[in-house]
Length: 235
Image 1 (tube, rainbow, N blue to C red):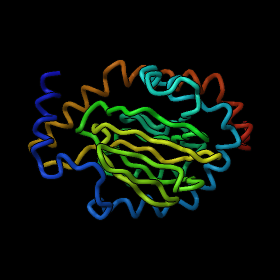
Image 2 (cartoon, helix red, strand yellow):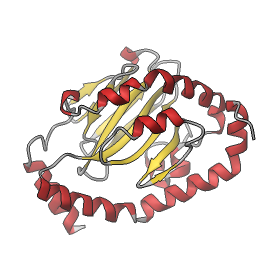
Image 3 (cartoon, one colour):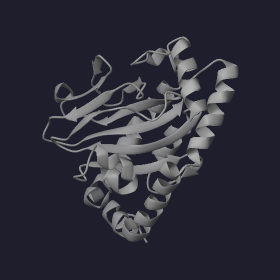
Image 4 (cartoon, rainbow, N blue to C red):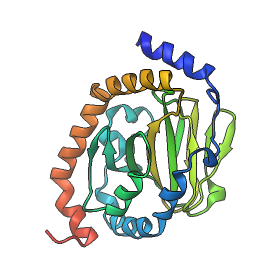
């Protein structure tokens, strides 16, 4: 814990350490991810036929119950700290994630109609959060605030922010808002990068992460065939 606190302090003192939303131009790989949006969107359309069988975030990561307990913030895991999921169901999404340097986790995140998340902070400033707008029914009714700054999503467009700042998100439309939801290592000078990767490695071995991986594996065992059936995937 002391190392994490010390690293957070060093990050805040580094260039861009207090930035809320980042300029996509500083992350050239965003264009490659966005290029997968049309095919990924078609894949997602098949997946959403199984929306009722996707878990609420709190059912996979118990701590998220502090933010949502009504199963209306749904997720579909694709990658978590070295382990890939759902590669046959969403191959284009997997290829898109493979474009992201220092990828740590990735999933589809579904904020259902009328759902709002209370203000909260991410675990650690050593990772940044990336969203690719997949389905944004009414951008003017869907948004996110990070610190004192606000933004919205647009379909096929990237949004990068530091979720260790207090943030909240909302979908005030009458349709689901869906994003590709990613964590990746914050770009840092070489000496800080090495320290950061060591801390992230330690985090990846905690119960916070390993339990969530196991919960998805169990969820897939229980509901995977039903999801495949709704997606039109042959057994």
